[in-house]
Image (cartoon, rainbow, N blue to C red; front, side):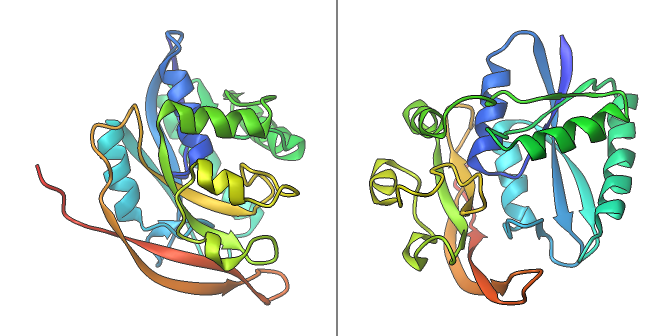
Length: 231
């Protein structure tokens, strides 16, 4: 079998990509690769606490590989640190890395180019599916996810903290990507068919963060606070 690492954010698309590969006997899932922001202990760009990712990986029964990026990390530094992480993966027998991208060609080409320079191959289990099909499949399989961050330039603030379900789809603006591929939102999956237990959490503080380039207040994030679970 081919040994694969999943480029993982804790969100719905990377989780669905993981699930599809777990159902494919050609692949062995080695681990989940997550990027964190130093000093914040949260998933880069998503704002989810690392504690939540650790609970999620425990429920999924998979190891986390961590890349800790400095704040305001340049692309050059990002690539340098990712290549170091990939080198370690190759030493561990990993030959491929999978991503949950669906249709953004420039992102795919960037990932393929970066991996080709390391001798590894990129996999895209969701590639070419319509966002409507991805959305429907994700819900019908039984995954449960919550929106942790939204772009206020694209979505009403009421979408923050909502569960991604049929009611959500009904209310979602028809002129936006239902999978959030254009940055409309980020999410965190807390239960599903490949989870050993639902990840327990409470909704915490909401905060608005600025756009990196314009400095304008733009992103509304809601904290997911981990809670103890009964064993």
